[in-house]
Amino acid sequence: MGSNAVEFDGVSRTFGADTAAVRALDIIDLDIAPGEFVALVGPSGCGKSTLLRMVAALDHPDHGAVTVAGREAGAKAASIGLAFQNPTMLPWLTVEANVMLPLKIVPPYRQHFRQEKRQAFRDRVHALLERVGLKDFALKYPWQLSGGMLQRASLCRALIHDPQILLLDEPFGALDQFTREGLWRSLQDIWIERRPTVLLVTHDLREAAFLSSRIIVMSPRPGRIVDDIVVPLVRPRTIAGTYEPEAVALCQRMRMLIDVTEAGTS
Ligand code: ADP
Image: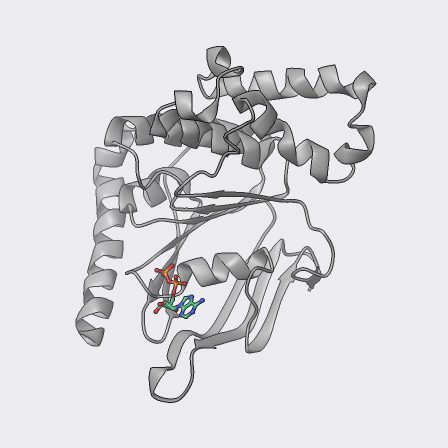
């Protein structure tokens, strides 16, 4: 206890009551070490997003406990960055101001958010925007950006305060394949450099194979962990590498497990 970035201890969660009750999670035990990149995969409805939301204390277990950096989730403002499938940017702020927002809110940055640090913060935003290919769009408004650009900006906003834990729920789900793969590369680079603990919910098995150091496969109704895979692929990984036999075998292993769990519930 205490040395893990995130712990789920006997976590269960049921939504609704009586005949309408949905057992979303059933006794989940999972320890995640600092700096791990963990993907949660499985069919829709197996409780992946609920697990993620619990880390941010946006949802709570009925039984069991969720611990973040040694404390009950939500007990202390943990250093967390969030990005979801549909990026919500404030339309009246520029991309730069949107990405800077966490620095205004999250300690210890907010104490320094005065004129003298403003330029340093702006430089920090610009450096991150440059990393994801948005250097020239800092002063544009969200509506002037494509979906892929918005998602890049959303990733920057999740990372700007250098969070210890990064929670990503299908962040690339709405993007075309090439844009998505470009973002995998950016995210891998940033993870290698900063080593945050990452929890990524995804339906894209190649994405899980490319990005993660560990993959948790889940089954639905009730949501359970059916496999816990250490990804054997060396880094830095390449898109071409996801078509090599080792990566293909990994995707097949996940796919077969998901087929089995889906067959069991239909
Ligand atoms: P996943 O992310 O794997 O698709 P979720 O965690 O979103 O799964 O949901 C797991 C199950 O719990 C689903 O059956 C979903 O309908 C249900 N569920 C999730 N959140 C709520 C909620 N706030 N109210 C009622 N049911 C919910």
